[in-house]
Image (tube, rainbow, N blue to C red; front, side):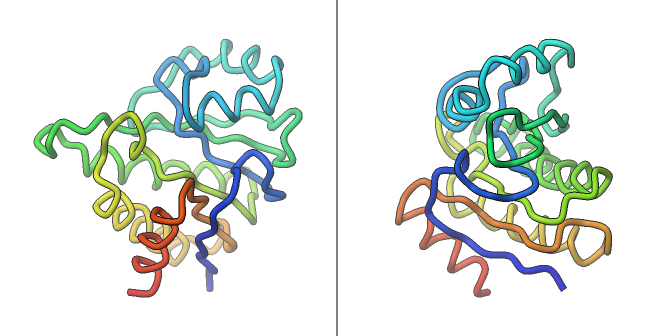
Length: 169
């Protein structure tokens, strides 16, 4: 049975097999978590991302972790919030589902997710957290090869409290 936990930490410092990057569609770096991951991994990550040709919202791509403690980085562009009327929930669900499936394909046992789309993309935290926890839990239960130790890495104490409440329900 999968273990899902939340913690407040810098995702770039976690000693896990894989971290997930809340990327933009170019995969060439940006602000927030994306920028932090690119800075910590070093220039080789950007060089590899340039070979991938971008990524559509809700899809996922995998790269090496380079100078990160994590062996892999899964990049997934989340949806920008437009009030929930532009398929945002389905797209965010796809981000988590595709990340879990890509991790399983690469034999990842431990992984960490940021709160995808909840920063500058504006997705409401409580809704996004429920989608994250439910989707990851479903994928972990449905696929025995899926990662079984999964962290939700939170930026603030408030985010952590929201994730802990969702994990407890």
